[in-house]
Amino acid sequence: MNFEVNRDQCIKIGQYLKINRKNPDQYYKFDNPKEHPDINIDVDVLSNFYGAVVNIDHHFWRINGNEMILDYGIIEGERIKGATYLWRKSKAMFDEDPEFFESENLKNISHEQFEKWLKDDTGNIPIYDPERRFMLTRNFGEFLLKYYDGNFYEIYKSSHYLLINNGVGFLERCEIFDGYRDSALYKKANLVAKIMERRGLWKFEDPINKTPPIDYHLQNVAIKSGMVVINSDEIKRKIRNKEFLNLNEELGLRLACKDVYRIICEISKIDPYYLDDDVWNEGRKHCQFEPPNCENAFLASVCLANTSNPELKEYAMPLVDTWRY
Image (cartoon, rainbow, N blue to C red; front, side):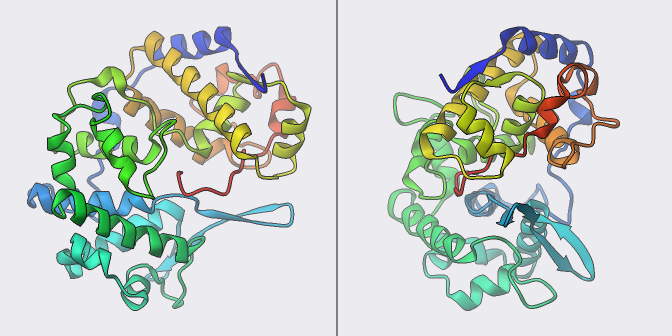
């Protein structure tokens, strides 16, 4: 096997999180008015907004030689990073025209409209591969109209409030959209489910089927902390050199991470969507840098890269050219 789960390390981190777990009120509520609409707006309107934005919420970096360049955009003179930039621009577009995120408009969106949505103060779209995001946006609008009368909220309701339901749960139904298609882990579908639950708009009846939205940051933390062990010398070389993993290598890593975070949730008793906040913030604020910035990191005392195996710091963030995350 290319990847192996270090169960002892997972148990160690799970027990640490159980002791040091946060109160739910300490977690982000997705209510920053610069990024999120008012909660009192009609749930159909809010559902379409969140469905459309999560549909293109992925891959905010590019590789230049052996250097990873993170995406930043300028809004009113402020330099804003990646996903935060996307949400700021989306909320501004929503404030200007709430009907912008209706499925009929998304299905037929023009390049001019798309650029108006995502251009920054310099007149450029500062996030990776805007043309792919444009096509994913059109696809989202088209299939939402075709199968759910243009209403993302209907997918939730028709799933009978279940994430997994013999092929017709919410995660499974989202597979009709190119931007969401990810039958191994349902990353974006889990992300939008997490946001809608956190905002109190939706509630799923089968929390056992939750999986953290596993992206680069969660993979990176799993490797550097020692919870996932890489057995392949070729994959070790690729990650150190910032080379893209192939699809089989990527799938093996993601499935190992899924097992890792399942173990941690079982031990810590933390909801997988809340665990995602803990690990994602750890990865974004500390682990993605070279070398990792371990100072004040939440997991510093139980992370093998920071304690007993500093060679793990030599790994870069695992990379794949994908729109799944």
